[in-house]
Image (cartoon, helix red, strand yellow):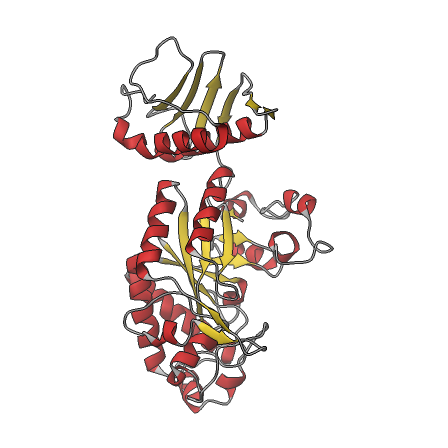
Length: 400
């Protein structure tokens, strides 16, 4: 039931549909919609303009005959429904579901509660992405950080550069087999639309200047040497990266990012910035000329120039950048959000500059690591806010 005193039924249409699907598919119960509370047990979804701190804040009240979920925004109703689902799934006995009589008031501590899914090294189908979005919603997380370009594969269709998927989306494995795949623009639109209904923000990651061998395999002129390379079929860090002295590289990236922006409504674009070896730049006349023309002391400052130039373009399109903690090297761009993966130090340094930070240390956040290095207990112990920060600095850590 949707309370029409505060909210038109249309505004909570997706939440009602989600609850009905959960009832049928998980509980074996059919929830019928009504516009009034009768004598039957009732679930009431209600938008209340005041009384909640954040859009995702919600309240649940459960007694023997009525279950009420209230929030000031549909996203809060969705988070309340996630809690209801958890209560039901955790209280199953012999095929029956028991929900305790409780009153819950809940609000998120962090605005960014994310999962990074790397679909470049290993390709996952559209169906798997949708399943992950469902799981994020169930755990009241709100960001899918979608890693779409890498040395080992380019996964996003770009109309202006068809070789990115024709060549860059596939690699020849060591056993000679062909591996890969990519998402069409229609796939992306469907996934983004599905996520928005679950109030999940999708932040795409388009790697630069390193981790770009798949793009260079498709378009060799993007590198310093212009020589042919294959899409990488091994793990690690590779020396062929985008040429920082070649203006056509920036034309290419601006073209690509223009198409990316059209697909993803998020205010953020993740630009990577990690693990970019400088050996090609050190040996490249064009890169050295760029450094001299811009009074850059070394190749780290050249990377900072590269990042800031892309940031300026994205800012002009109304987007903010997120980058891995290597973007601190050579000078941090104002307004850039630092995602700290090599421990917490990069995030701590970022907030001391007045920049926001996301904490993703390998010690607690990397699920591709061996169980000897990271296990469930360690994950649950993770606190994104390290000790030793001022109150103002703590407020700049937006999550994990």
